[in-house]
Length: 247
Image 1 (tube, rainbow, N blue to C red):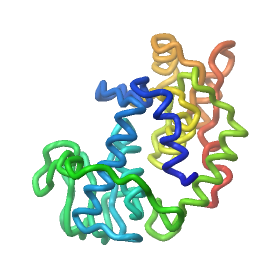
Image 2: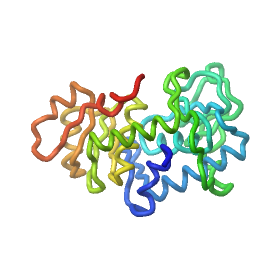
Image 3: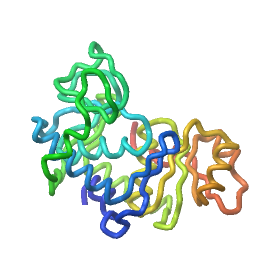
């Protein structure tokens, strides 16, 4: 299985079960909706001229839309560039952008933004059944490229080390997009439910864990160590989700 196939693999079984909940916006993304949007948006990107290896800036905050945008680009054969600056074929955003900093041909946005077309425009041209078997898929800084094989292999290893089950509810208290994306990837591979916290604090995480009946929280070191001691909540240092990747 490729990287995106691993993340989508639980969709047939989990169907309308929640995959990602965004505390900031209140949006809940189901497994079925994730797979549907990724494959349809990938088809739309291809229809708009995206070719294998083309870069796409992804300027989307952590939440329900980030994994959709990134995996749609990867499934279409493009390279998702996490950021709002640089030269690329296209851009997927959620907020206003600086045209002088983002040298792109086309922009699609999850929200109304001047100079951008709705992301929904990408969803109306059918589904892309098969994604690429190999090749570059993601970059954090525009220089270090992660390919599909590397990301898939690391995700399998991560699932072995940080065991997450389909019944787990995982709070992501991570603020850095790439680490947050890896938390979502890991949880979705297992069929779990990720709740993305907004401006997480110790008190906020504990309240959220109680409200959502969470079983796992992934957080920065300082926050993670202050959350230790709960007999029900398993605490994971966010560095663990990227420790095996050379950044």
